[in-house]
Image 1 (tube, rainbow, N blue to C red):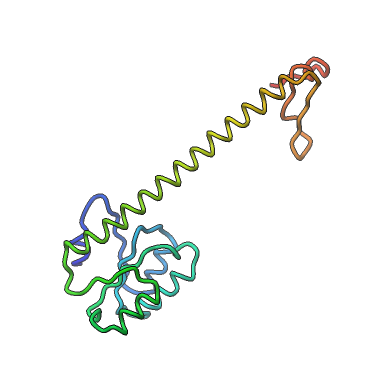
Image 2: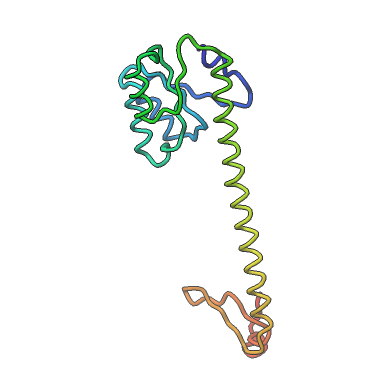
Length: 170
């Protein structure tokens, strides 16, 4: 509840889980910018959840902030980083600290999503330009050109092929 209160912001969609298995289930259904994972959870501890996250392609790169009251014990810190944590948050929760850490990962996630989207748009523009260039080139060839798909269906006729066959590009 303290974490949810600290992160109450319309820019975030917070998903809570009450156990390790429930957290893993949420991770299968949603994409996350960051996971705040309590070390001590019923059914499966945070280290086990983190290890399973790192084994799955979908969740391998999701940053994990471990939440613990045991962060002063070096063996717990080492175990957390070994399981895949990028940082620790200690109890009691300091709202400013958790907001700052989550904001960094949320910003990185949004920036990555923008880059992916821009890359997809760029590939689409390049594909259209390539198709336009190819079509223009084929239309300007002095020989008849008929292009088919893998099933043999006609997909393109240049003007000379239209004249010779009586077919139209339409």
